[in-house]
Image (tube, rainbow, N blue to C red; front, side, top):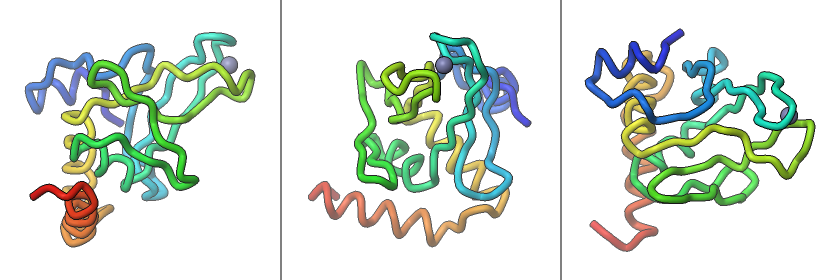
Length: 134
Ligand SMILES: [Zn+2]
């Protein structure tokens, strides 16, 4: 398990990528990255899994779309997953990503051999082709 402080210390980040977050760590089932936070409404702990495709999209600085085709929200460079506490589907959870953090998650997934470089490169190529850029 990583704390944001440890990640910031190792990789030199500012350590303020997320707010209201308890912890974040690689998903042991290999689906992506798990962010734990407290619901701002009821206070219970909620775990949000951000999938590898979503992380890779975020790392490419585009607004991710989840497996259901639901686009994330974005505000001032922050990306908010369409994840809600069971207590009230209308209250967003205090979890957000910035591209730099997504890049760190992707790199950690690569170094843990949870995802392959070919997988990441394939998705990045698709994203860039769709965007029409280079
Ligand atoms: Zn709640």
